[in-house]
Image 1 (cartoon, one colour):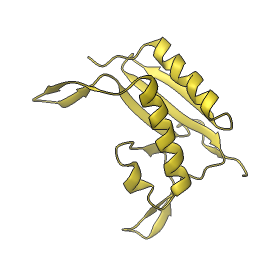
Image 2 (spheres, rainbow, N blue to C red):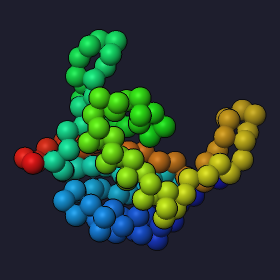
Image 3 (tube, one colour):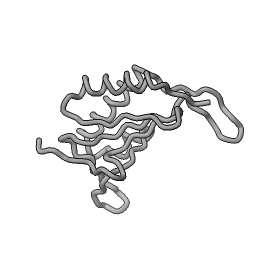
Image 4 (spheres, rainbow, N blue to C red):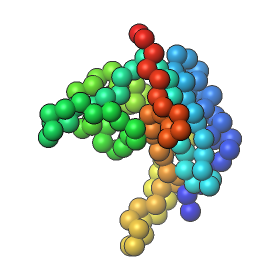
Length: 127
C-alpha cells in the first residue's frame, strides 16, 4: 500500500524551501498515501502552448510524467519543475511497489503537483 510519513513530507518541505527561497510552496500529505506540492507564489509563468488549439493555456494541475511535452514551449517552467522533481526524488524516490493485474503499477506514494490551490490562486510575482 502506498505510504508517505509526516517526517518525509516535512523533509521535502524544508528542502524545497532551502533550495528555492524565492518560491512559496505548500507541501502537504493526504491520507498517508499522497504528497501534494502546490506552487503558490513565484516569478515563473506556468502557461503552456497547446499546439492543437494554437493558444496559450494556464495550468493548474501538472502531470509530472509529461513535463517535456506539456512545457516544451516554456523552458523556465520546465527547468524549474524538473529541478523540483529531482529534489523530491533525491529525498524520497518514487518507486513501484508492485504490479497488480487490475490496477497496473502501485507506487510507494502518489505525487500531485499543482500551480495554486482550488481556494488560493497562484500569485505571479514581478521578476
